[in-house]
Image (cartoon, rainbow, N blue to C red; front, side, top):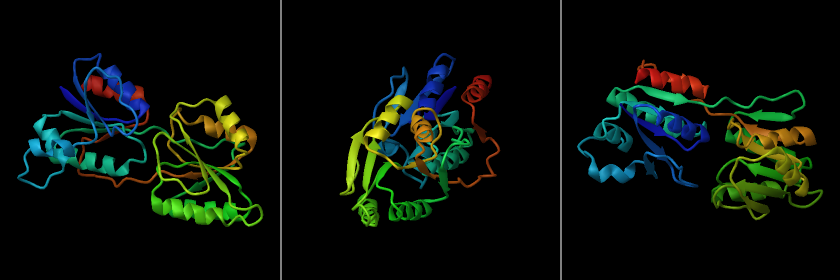
Length: 270
């Protein structure tokens, strides 16, 4: 039995480690943007296009589809980030093309508690509109942890910062694991989770943060900022997860929100 795990999350690594103790061959794929996992199995870093020259180019199938065929993969396990929808859609489609089971692990969303002040936004446009309104009405120090920033977004964020006429341009405190494009009015913090609540409270207080912008990634690694915001009474603008189109043709699809259940299902299959 050969299983390809599309990783990049802490849960994917945990699942791979557990499966390595069973009688299966694991191949673990990661984008390779931040750090490499310490796993005793074959690791693919940087996607599947690097294998394109080695595989059959006679059709228009994706590089992932070709890889699944060439390596005779039996199960495709998608444990990527909840916002990596393009990768998940391609994985679902490729599994269907080669007629193998597609198993996805989707970590549960964060849910607001009574003391939280969250605004849940459905898409990027709604999020940016709400951010502009918040700055226009006085937000000065924004803790921005919404992923990578391109040049276009950086310019847009600067234009929003200047909406704060009462106190001068607002400031973005941007935290990311790797370098990113930065707005002019920003302070960059390079860090990678997991984070704890004491450190997050100290950071929010140090930079006098009055607004947090993030996405509903779920999981424990970055949850502490929300717990700190709850204690400090800081408002949160949270981007909701995109929806992935259903593929009703693939009856072998299985989706799990509990890692142990996902592991037990795969273990039983082998």
